[in-house]
Picture 1 (tube, rainbow, N blue to C red):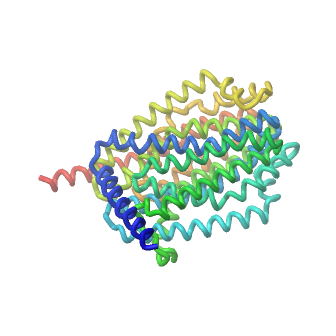
Picture 2 (cartoon, rainbow, N blue to C red):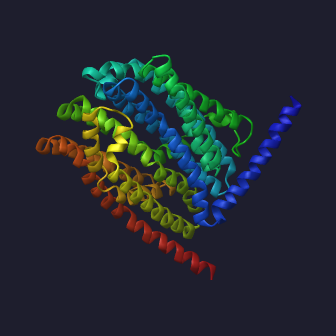
Picture 3 (tube, rainbow, N blue to C red):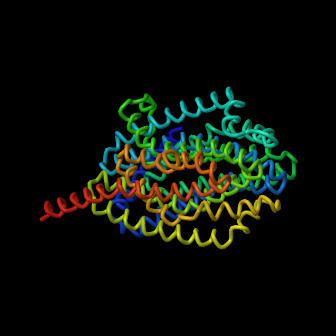
Length: 473
């Protein structure tokens, strides 16, 4: 027992040593090198995580059929809503902790960490209770109908059970990344994706479990991720210190976490609500095949966007730490570099998808009707994809700076304020085409809204930099 405590103490000291080096890096290391070092593992990890749904869809499409893809497409926005709720805590908590670490307030960082543990437990329990108690109503609201209804119910009832494991894995992974430990954050997601990819063909083809097998594989993978991250924190690998007394919710901390995380909830939650409405509209104007086609496209885009999202995950701790340390010169520099890199990534992926849309859709299915609809829709949906990098980095800046209101508005602007009305209006005139063209139109308008918020903020940052220069003279 004594030896174990000594080992735990040694691990904690080593963790503090790593944190000191990470903190120094966030505040001093060359921005380009630092952003690359944090973004690449985050990108690899997030791509691995997004492979859950992608791999499920590939195996289900090949092993069960188009209607089964439609069933998974119904459940996906429900999973997105669960993910959005979890990210509210993960993004909000990591922003709070990053700024506290930047200000060298370790006690308050530990206190916030304890509050996150409690909030995650309450959230996951609530999601489970509501999810099972109102399962039929939820599935109906998200578009479950016709031939795809049975597939949606089979997948949903099993995959929902993994909610507590997924919630803790996502929240704690964000905290690991906030400490600057991007490699561990990457490994946790890669382990989960690998387990899921191994189990999917065994359950779907070997045991002939169909969509139930895909769901079970995901739950087992999420449980393994939960165990891995629990081991990381229990062995003192983190610089953050867990204490039972910090579990008691502290209203100011809870309020700040939820306020900052609300932008993530707005973005992903809006996407979930939007997808539910979209499923109904697609079913009305294009039938089950159109629902399945968008389900495939949505999964492809989630993976394709991961390099940019990984860049954001690398950007957030750097910008948040230096904003907390009042080093606005580094905040400006990392924002400029992140925007440039995101633009290059978006342009490259745009060209790839425009040139090879048929090949991308054909990975999931041999149904020629689904391939033709998906190929055309994919090209239209990504029509203005290169400009999304500006919108993404602009909204992320406000998250890093702890400015909840503009971040929340920007998160809602594209999907709720713009895309949703267009999805309801344009099909009345253009039918199914109106649904597809609503996406590039809303992307363009949302970029102009982001510009309107960001330009005054950039002028403020420049003034702060001038004040720093004047003070240093």
